[in-house]
Image 1: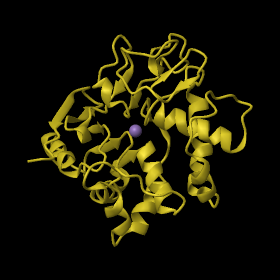
Image 2: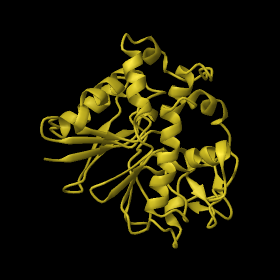
Image 3: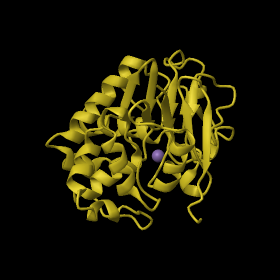
Length: 271
Ligand SMILES: [Mn+2]
């Protein structure tokens, strides 16, 4: 039995298939985990969702910012953006099943000693706080108030999480931490603008995983979202950056948890 954790697939169904072939992935025996952003920008979002859903108990995944965006668009609260490639999901004969499956995926997962999130965590969050915050957001995404939430989900404020935050503000900053963070300050202020690599932080900021006092530093963390990191977290250990820019013409990465080996597959969308 092996567990393969893949980076941001973003609708790149064919590279995903090639990667799984290369790993000799067997759904009867192995598990596939995905760090979020299953959909968008790539050509076959519906096929990716269908594959993941079909895997049933052999699949674990967390939602990314593009997955939440798809749910917002599908709920009718947000228009499609110019570069979105989500129409194949909305037009799919099984759209309702795919979207219902998607909205029941978690925002953070702790399993077999690994924490999996799409983007990251702030220094002040320990494992319990991270999971608690994720559960609060999941309840809303799955619940009767989800359309109301999707209307207020977008935005970069509040710039930091505080335990005293309530309501939509609290949920929005939780969303931004779990699905959008790259750089933050030591006291947890988010920079949601800079998309450069971890070695080029804005002034007063560090990559979220590089803060020395980060409360999750003893928990191995699997994450995606940061294509410019190219899988490289510098001197930071115990963090696994799995987005290697497949949808941008680079590579899709799978980490095997049992032997820590990386398998990569060229994007090759054009072949
Ligand atoms: Mn992302």
